Image (tube, rainbow, N blue to C red; front, side, top):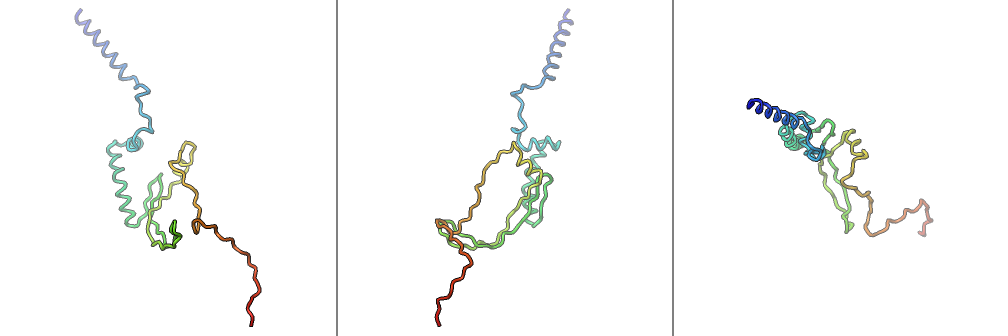
Length: 160
């Protein structure tokens, strides 16, 4: 009698454990894909551990900086290309005073996005973080630009 009682209790607990193990978590406990850190999503897609994905992310910046510092172009598949470009020496107008400034030549990093990245940015679901206003060139602030006159010639007023 006593053995049957323990056997029945074991079957009850075993079936309860099987039901709990096979049941999925409640909907409210699931974490949405967008809420997960980028390293966790990279780890899942790349089939690597979270630690390995974090190490790759932490190493990416210094490696890019080193390669660009040597003047090399760096292509990241599915993302785009980073390269060093030079902006030539040029003149600009100082805002507020209208004074002409000489801007020395400088190098900068240019990113050329992959075509699939541009398509993703222009999808219906993509919401811009910022809207950049259109550029308007005003040669002299607070003044209306003069109108260009035609190619008419007037007779000279000089006498001999």
